[in-house]
Length: 401
Ligand code: ATP
Ligand code: MG
Image (tube, rainbow, N blue to C red; front, top):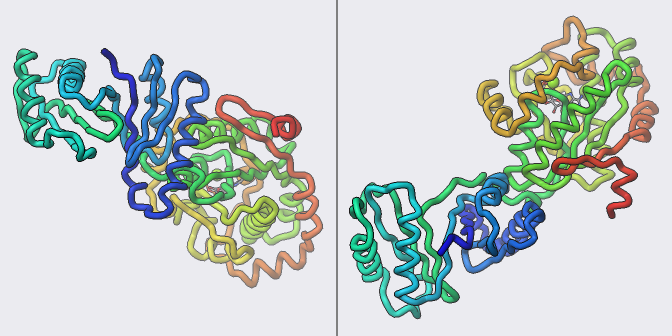
């Protein structure tokens, strides 16, 4: 006997009423996509549960992959048996014995299929007795057992588990629309992308770079960060915006205190245009109140004037320590701290205004007359598609379609 299924629980989804079907189909599709490298396994849905049928595959690498799929609350190795008492007894014993030297257990039977003749209380007793008399050094403890042998009797079969692993939680990516993540090479924005994906949002990314002041390696850093994020989604399209000319112009012709504000406004204008072109309904940033001059309330107010698209700022209330902890968890931290300069660190005004005003920013922008340059930057956006473990250029992507 062996564990032949992985049982997937998706707690939060149960709340979604009519939309539930859509969520489940998306979750099933996301799991299937992640498990493509295991052609033997199948992913099935049955009322209130999802199952991965292993067909002889090693479950552990599969469980590891599933831990990155948003929408999964927890997962368990399961044995599937017929709805037959002798078979259930045997499987329950196997499930208990496969746990690491438990000193105590309890049995918890759920009789979802009411046609099964033995009620759950009675089943608990029958199975408890069977396990006790067939194993040594283990007793029943209904309050704090080392192992809970769970038995779900369903119409089509019975599933038995004796352990559970925590899943990523959240909602399946693809069920909450798409956002444009402003992805710098820093620590914050990849974490912001991760947290947005956790709420079921698919992402594309935009990166502003200023060659030759920013290097190829700085660009590669952003690709590597996006690649880490694909672990939680599918593929990520990065819009690489050439920002050199605009940045130079802004920093030459804008009074020092306002160059940062005007530059950020240009980034938002360009991001909104990319959203419009790609049917994306919001922009996400790694902004966090109070970290740097551009992130004061006044600064956000001044920068935000140029777009009325929703700006998602999932890190707004977090402490730097919390952000770093997440970036370590998702393995972006080591990439983010690579030393290459990004466009914002090169063109840094000596004394940016911490309380910029909207009307002053507009005034300096009018003098710049930079619409033509924004258009030119948009015309020269290069796209890079990043997929888990590999990246393709836009031309190659055309071939993929
Ligand atoms: P991060 O760690 O994400 O770089 P930060 O703390 O350095 O953030 P800022 O430099 O003020 O903060 O940037 C705020 C946000 O603006 C970033 O989190 C990111 O979303 C966006 N951003 C900054 N620079 C770029 C860039 N070169 N390309 C795309 N987005 C950027
Ligand atoms: Mg930064």
